[in-house]
Image (cartoon, rainbow over all chains, first blue to last red; front, side):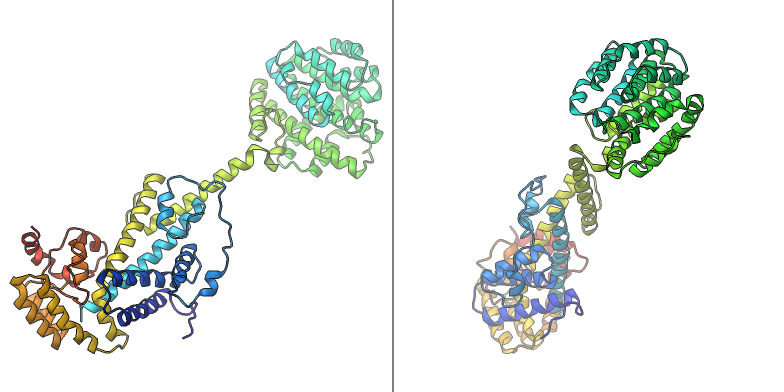
Length: 144
Length: 436
């Protein structure tokens, strides 16, 4: 299927990936433990979240890079293997109490405070979309 | 004497910018602090200019306590060789400024000071004495009374033109102000630009002095002069304002710092709109809010992924998978429920399981009619800290205690995410009793 992110909205892409991952998990892990399935579903959530951004933000690239190393993804390999445009900034790091945030947002280790805030905003937006998507799925399922 | 010495200091430093470094070293600002140092300043200037007519200068200065300045300039000219005319005039002007130090003569003095400085500017780059540049300088003084009045008129021009320190404007200004009747010198472009740069600097220093003295406040003049110059970011107070444009040593850091802080403030404002809470007290609290919100969202994803375990089985029909899987799990769910052990509800569970075999909706209604709720067992077990007890296949379970975190977590969105919430109130009592 041809994925034209410009024509298809971001939540649709996210939903597509997430549902596909869910069905995949459903097929393959019927006999796995509860915790394992939880973890896989959570990974699927983050992956679909990162995929929906199209690789524009650093956190999505870092997420997908981590997933790719575990061999969980076959698409977007080209984007991930592209080297980071910016070198890790070590001049200041701007340690103004934002290290907690750096730990929370993936791939934001070597960033300036301004870029960190940008990444955080993008991350929060995507997280909210993912949460609303999962919640709507639960609503659909529980109202069956 | 203090204000005038400051002005002289300004003149000296302006000159120092153009004068060879050796002379600049001579003209130390500290020497101008004391009133008695002014004489030394004159002597140094004179000596630096290579003039040996200090005695003659002194004579001219003695006579120039309160004379018309042009006359004193004339005398200075008469005493000194052409090369030193500017220096002598400048020295005489400075001396007069120091001697008179009155509000009446201050506007005139400033203009004369400017003229002399311009002359010295013309002198400095051309140590060889290029007549092309020097011609206007003595001639400006040669204009005498006409020149003086015109100078007074020109000084506001100097100030006005000074707002845009363009070298070309300075050139026009210079020519317009002081070359009243004499011919304009044919200046070579190289010298001209070099001269113009320096003259622009000196213009800056002097025009600020002129503006402030135009108000008739010599004491106030020095303060704004020094402040205007220090605003340029230079250490020495009387530095021309033009330097501020280029952003000298300390400026880039402060400007970069300011830009960085502005950028961060912008982003914080954008983030604040995303956040549910709307109070921006300061950056630290906003940062804490952001961190808390990110943690909260990540926790929601985790919890929803656990609840999705039950949904994962039901997602199959959504994506067109085979339904036998659902059937295979239902007996398992019943067994698991029985295994977990809530004997009082086993019958109800069996009933629910039977109903679920027919229709999910009927099973749900049955449970709700009993005042029970359906909740994904994965979520319930996790929240009640009994993950091992929850079977993977089981996707629903009769009433389970609703721990406090769950309402808190799910409460943020408006819509209830799980069916458990629909009968939350009815199961509250059950939760209290069963959660002992």
